[in-house]
Image 1 (cartoon, chains in turn yellow, red):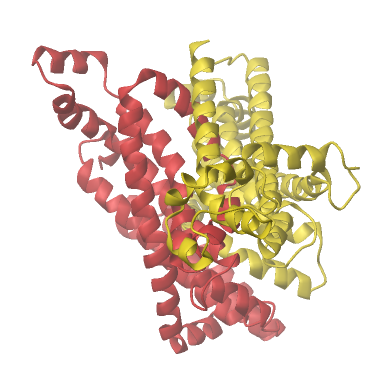
Image 2 (cartoon, rainbow over the protein chains, first blue to last red):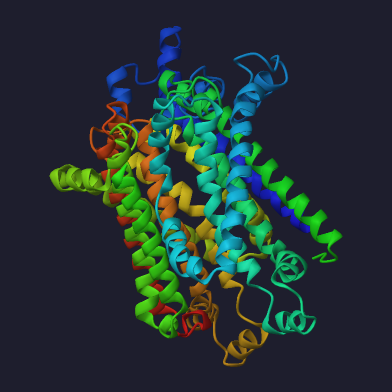
Length: 305
Length: 281
């Protein structure tokens, strides 16, 4: 109860800061508009105003403060503007419309999920190989760890162009980037998980004369589940970032990344912010979904935490 | 076809060599542990070279390693300028500012139970979000030059660092804190002598995560507008010109920078937290 109160307080304070910050961020643009509309602005010289600090402009022009929260193309849109835009582009538009965030969100989400499935599947396979083969462990694992320190995103534009030049386009190139980003966290986590049974447990299975396959299915795989889900949470967030970044370098026309890019070209700040919030909500929902599956799986296995 | 066959043979030979090394009596020694991944990496490079030459893969799809190496050697001046712009100016300054700010906020959060209860879930939530998406906004606010890239990096590294540091500052046990109390140690004394050292493994975990994020943030922010220099700028324009050898040269630079950056932080970690069990060899 106290935790909820604390979180709500922090969020309320953040929103308060946001409204307060919108005033100095937007005041210069508002004053230009107000002057054009015929209002009396205190330093009535535009050049003089540009040289002044925005803070000094607020007090003598206090009439303009409400307008800083209602500008058409603000430098920093007010929270309610973003909320209204989100509402209009999700609920009030048909989901097939090119202006609907549900449509763009689905384009990104489908690439994310496809890439996540591919990356997770390959990652688990590689981890199984690494755990069972000493050579693979010694030769592949160091590179898997090094690859974590490489900004893999740098590959994204190239992957898209290369796949385009051999005739593959649409969802697959983005999914490849997503898969790449979710692949390595899953490998590293899964290897750790498959190795987590201690020597006593492994010895017990040996006294049962269990085969390697039996040890794998009955001990190693169940024991790895907490580690796997921890990596899956990282992996699905990384997949979404991959899908969004995959939309940037090609100038794609649909998807949340495309909305960000188009918004930055045309100075549509409200559009950028609403796409950003849509991406954030999507990421939160995906992580929460993985968390839910984790709780259900672990509960079925009798490992309720 | 001869080159392809040669590639297959070489691959088989490299694998056989590694199998022998891994199964040999000296498999636990430092030399073998180093040799096996090196052989694996070298085989991949050679096979890549031979396959690209053997199948005559066009340059726009995949350049051979030798072509990339030549391009790298030819354009060290450009690569160095891009490195300075993106890594030193953008990523590194953003990394320092972001991590320092997160440390200060973490100390504040740590002093107030209410703030910790409220800010930590929000911070955890923010750490999982696609924060790179803020890049267009920050480029709009701070201009095209490196300041906007540093700003993106600050936002990206702040939350993982904050969450880790706050978790680390709570790492001491009640007995240790009680001991400090019996010594009549003030808040800052017990902070600097007990809690900050105990938090170091967590702080360095955050610092290591942040190294990769910093480079990613700086590169992606350049996709949204940049001066005509920088790794992200070079990658996106070279892709447009189908100069894939240049793209790969930049990727090599990014890989080297990322690995060295991470390695440097890991070395400092070993030096600072030598007492921690994970550092025992």
